[in-house]
Amino acid sequence: MTTRRELALAALDPRPRWARARRQFAGTRLGTAVIVRGRFLALPLLAIAAGLAPEHLSTRMAFAVIVIATYLILRGSQSLFGIAVLAAMLVYLPQQMDIFERGIMFDIVLYSLLGIGLNVVVGYAGLLDLGYVAFFATGAYLYALLTAPEVGGGYAVGANFWLIIPMAMVLAAFVGVLLGVPVLRLRGDYLAIVTLGFGEIIRIMINNEDGITNGAPGVFSIPHPDFFGRQLQGPFEMYYVVLPACFLAAFAAERLHNSRVGRAWEAIREDEDVAAAMGVNTTAYKLMAFAIGAAIGGAGGVLYAAKPGAISPTDFNLDVSINVLALVIIGGMGNVRGVILGAMLLIGLPEVLRDFSIDVAFIHLDNLGADYRLVIFGAALVAVMVLRPEGLLPSRRRAAEFEREAALEPTAAT
Image (cartoon, rainbow, N blue to C red; front, side, top):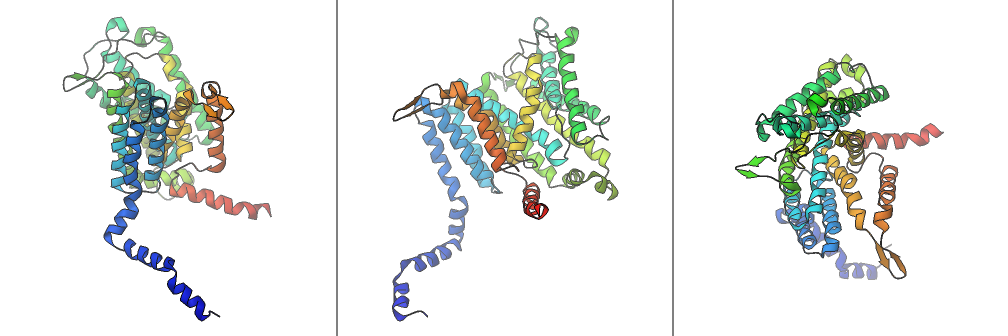
C-alpha cells in the first residue's frame, strides 16, 4: 500500500512531469517534426566536420558519415526530407576529397546502380543470376565501339553519349531476353550455373573476337561525354552523372516493386507453381525481370566505359557478378535501400582500410590495413551474415520470413 510520504515524494519527482511534457510536445506539429527529422538535421554537420578533417582522416570520416547517414535515413524511412539530406551529402562530400577518394565514391555509386538492376532479378523475382556482368559488358562495349577511333579499336561512327545510353539499355534488355528464354524452366542452383556460363561465354567472346571487339587489348581512346559543350573527365565529374542515374533507377525500382508487376514477381519468388495456378503469366514476368535488370546493367556499362577511356575483357570477369550479388545479399534482397548500403560497405570498406593503422599506448601497427585489409573485410562480412542473415536493410517480407524460421527452429528441434 502506498504511504503518504511516497505520494509526496512522487509529487516532487520531476521525471513524471518531464515525461508528461515530452508527450505533450511530441503531440504538437513542431514536436513531431523535431522527433521525426531531428536525426537528419545533425547529418549535415557531420558532413561538414568530415570535410574539414585532417587529410589522413578525411577518407575514413567521410566514409563513416555516409554509411551512418545512409543507414539512419534508409532504415524504414519514407521521408523525402531524409532522402534529400542524403542526396545533398552525396553531392557535397566528394568535393572535399582527392582524386583517389572520388574514384572510390564513383565505384560505390556505380555498383549501387548495378545492384539495383540485379535486385530486380534476384530480390524481386527470385531468379539467381550469376552472369550479370554480361549485360554490364554489353553496354560498355557498345559505347566504346561506337565512339572510339579506329586506331583505338572502335568504329568512330560519331554517336552521342546521351543517345547511346538508351541504345545500350535496349540492346542489353534484348540480350537479357535471349538469356531468359532458354532458362525459363530452370530454378535455383541450375539457373545459377547456366547464367554463370552465359557470363563467361560473353567474356570469352569479346576476348577472342579480334575483328569486332579488338580482342584482348580491348578498346582505348574512348572519348569522354559532353555536357552542354563541356567535356566530362575523371571520376569527379562522371560521379555526378552516375549519381542521378542511380537515384532514378532506385525510384523506378521502388515504383515497380509496389505495382502489379512487383506483386507478380513476389508471387513467382515465393512459389512459381502456385503463382501460375493463380493466373500469373510466369513466362512473361520472368522475361520482364531479366530485361529490366539487364537494361539497368547496360546503362551502368556505358557509364563505366565513359570514365577511364579504355576497357578490356579483363574488366568483365566473374568477380563483377559476385560482388554485385554479394552487395545485394548483404544489403538485403528485395530492398533497394539495402542495396545502396551494401554497395557502400562492400565496395568502399576495402579501399578505406588501405591506410588503416593502430597507434594506441604500446600497440603500433602502421601497416595493418595494407597487410590485412582483406582479412578484416572478410571478417566483417562473416559477422554481418552471422548476426544479420537477412541483410542489413531487408524487405519486410524477407525479414518476416527469417523471423518465422527462427521461431520454428525450437519446435523443429523438439
